[in-house]
Length: 490
Image (cartoon, rainbow, N blue to C red):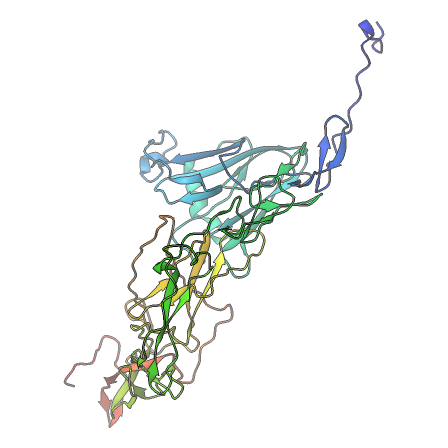
């Protein structure tokens, strides 16, 4: 029988193309023509990979596994793990994002993929700076199984030293791991490359757009929107608004008292007054019936006193008292003889933002750089400072305290080692969480420059609110030795 002959006049099969190639970025493999084609407008392609950046649900080939590993019996490889992990904890999909909700269980997000040749997986994740409450680990393995005892050893071992490459100015990290050809199992990943072929381009999600041959989708700005697969963003009508990366517009709400906040004007000749400013971004309408107009400025009042350790200067600004002086928020007085000023920051009055503090806001969405339109992320309100009221989603409102010179403990012996029980300084603050959205989180972060140094001169941060009596020897103040303290009478 001749293998080249077919019965019933059926045509010979067409030989397929060599599968050793891949289409370039912005293209896909057309199965009918077996040629690389440009992605249509409103879609994109990585060429030889696939990107996961919108999670409406757990995608195919991904799985989430939550295992209780805290009891010792659950780490034993001869016993089954107890299924008592909380529901909706660990790795979950929420608001089109893959997030981790703290759980007592080990939560593993796993992706299975077969590669026709060596490739890599790149993943982007957000982790608060200087976070010590979470252990984040990514591992790649083949078909061989691994016990949870080994998993815990790896989590608590060398992988703690692994650091991502932080992107400037935020908490986003990007890592890349090389993969071998064949079957790979990647745990806790959100993005992977070097798949066999991309047979169609992926639609840009709502709130994004792309042109022809795009490698990725770009975000729509605030005030614009787009539906999935769009080639451009559309401006919202004047009566509506949208946040950045929005898939639709919503009606502008009527203005209420919550859309304004009070600001204390600088003191002039010992007098000041309160004015009101609109919350940013300015989206409410004051032209509708029942809308609250911006309140009129208040009457002139005497300037309130400053925080302890500060005083009003000639321009009406609160500034720190000079060296060896102290105050209770009004005039500065020189510390009495045989006393030492207790320098620091004592912020209990919030009429204005202190000189060494700053506020800013930033989007916590990785990708295109978008500017935050909130001018004052934190607002002083007299007895406290609070975050700005805003309709924005997915942003971080930051309040920063800059300490340039460091602190000194005048009662600490020169050669005495500091510790958590015997510190140079400490910080305390009272706070209350009252959010309209239960997803809000407060982070307290300490960040130091990469090139730290110690000042030898006696220049210390802040102002003195009190003066401390110092012990004397031969007519001079002396430091206490380790284990000693100052009494009130000696």
